[in-house]
Length: 273
Image (cartoon, rainbow, N blue to C red):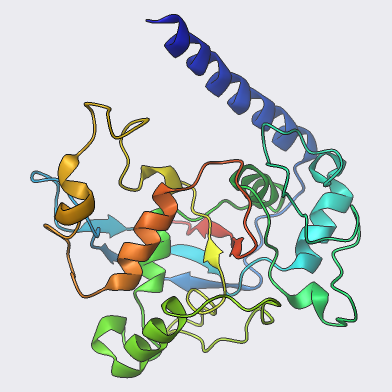
């Protein structure tokens, strides 16, 4: 192992240890399914798959938040867990834009906005989102779970077969995010009562970094070359589903400490057998 590779491995271990220490010291009693919907078991068809990969993956039944986590909910978290306040967060876990849209550590306000606590929590890193979920007794949804939920339409289990749903997707993915994000829950619910999977913000998933990239750079010999550029749609399950391509590309561009003004999250729970 090279010195560089060894140093990188040590950093990854330290990241994991520090996160585990913070989570275990601040975990709240929870695991309640209040505010969540139960999605039945179903199939997930990956956008991209290698030659020998199965066409579909089975997704077990799980609970998913009906709406993204709000600023008000995240405020409760940072009150209970001071290490995740803007002025105290460890820089390994969040970049310098973490909660930069808040006025202060415990003030998530937007000037003259009485509904600010009902707007989505953004400028939150993957580490912070994961810690919040653990504190609540939940977890982040996996990419197959998120995509399985997002594939449902307003009325049909297969949203892409629903013209109104496809139109709504095209409208949002083709528009810039507004300066002030709408309230959570303002979007139309899907078949199982989930709001805002499309039309409000991008969302973290537990395994976001499994998307597309399989190495540290495009010079890495471990990359699947057919997943990039002109070959990007080869073998894709639905080549006209450009929102899915956008989500895959977006996820592959992220790193765990990143924070963005239109990136938030919601929580999930595994259903009991």
